[in-house]
Image (cartoon, rainbow, N blue to C red; front, side, top):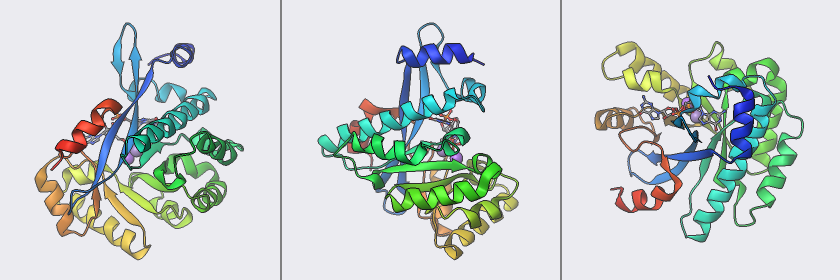
Length: 254
Ligand code: G
Ligand code: G
Ligand code: MN
Ligand code: NA
């Protein structure tokens, strides 16, 4: 793991980058947006994946600084794509400390205001159950507030937590992201397939949109379409890519 002071230096030296993984409508192939995934372009260690530094930030106030950098960068990227005529959306992963920062919503509004061409619905906030558990009432009110402000919210890694049903009931996020562990196993494991099917039923019954993560093959995509899953994300569609590759990828997709 990287140390907090190294992460702080990395932020000051602007060494972090966002890569973007496409999310598509599985039936039509239409690109509905991108998930921003952070990487660290480290001067001596090369490109570092978040697993090497995000866990080190757990419960540290620096997670809020890095989270703010992610939001600013995603909004600036959206402004650049808007200027190029690429109308799309970006999802960002929100850390639990960001959710408990009392200034989060007001700061987000100021961050949005700094990019006049960007509409709030172009930004989606992905929330983990672990980030909401400690203070579900607060996060529930925050999600409602954010969605009234026009932002989108999604429940990330859905199904992997201890109280997914409470998470679903309490947080009125418009989208559920079905965790990749269930999706990946659904073709060879009847129990994983049953979980995916049940989460899709839940999504319909709660009038949420469902997105399957970890769509690794064409066959996964086909099976998901047959189960009525509208959206997907995964290696069968594309890996996360640098921002400057997105326009080319979109022109070659389908
Ligand atoms: O990018 P990768 O494919 O390795 O992502 C690994 C994990 O890191 C995922 O759980 C993802 O949600 C998380 N992650 C990626 N980018 C960010 C980020 O900007 N902020 C936070 N808090 N987590 C992120
Ligand atoms: O926790 P979160 O859903 O934010 O994590 C996204 C992570 O999943 C990133 O590390 C991303 O690189 C990874 N990922 C995206 N698509 C696939 C896939 O099809 N298969 C696998 N194994 N991982 C994927
Ligand atoms: Mn995510
Ligand atoms: Na996820």
